Image 1 (tube, rainbow, N blue to C red):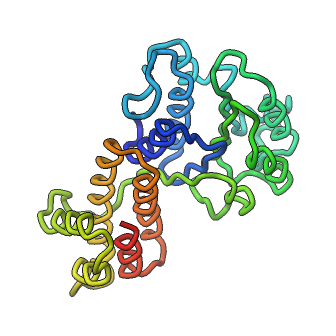
Image 2 (cartoon, rainbow, N blue to C red; image 1 turned 30 degrees about the horizontal axis):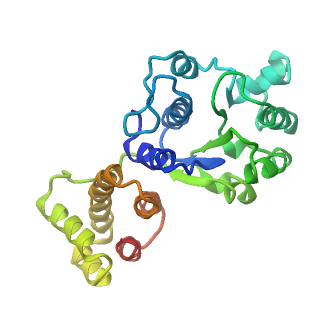
Length: 280
């Protein structure tokens, strides 16, 4: 297993039989995003008898091995190297690539309408979705809205704001787990008490609880304390999701993960904390 919280959201989709046609995986490192996408592809196509992120793909069957090594005919990852090969670019043109071209995207879309050669599901991974030109993004729109049967799209990016909005809006957004700096030890008794109280109150007195969590702290310390609170809270929600992969619990975990991303931006800690507590 690569990413605990992200895995559990994707696993919940698998377990509930509501796998989306397209996902936008946001945050984490380049390696994290690729590993999560490939692990998702393995889970959909594992031949070892397990399906979903509770147990994960077996990792031993032919399908799992070939997907991991990126040589499975039904799992394709678009990056500049593969685009150069698709379009038979010269070494000089390969080195100058700055965006994904419409001809490369059209080839992928055409492949999506073909039946899988070996796998149960075809997976198309676009690594660095912010590199889609306006033309290539427009070529994707229809297939993202209504992908052919047995075809799924995973768009990966470190900066969703740079992905064309029409593409972004058609994908189910999955924030990846990522480390938060400046956090205190997650066994801090006070943090644990706030987390438990927030889960038990179910949104009641959210403003008062948010004020207590952030009370009498300078802005810089507020951000650190809230980061640690969200980190522990996401862990608790992850545990709940393993026991109950309901849409409600998936939504709660997504809200918490998104708030961790928003906290790294210029967002009011008080407002962000209140939003999270109300969502519970």
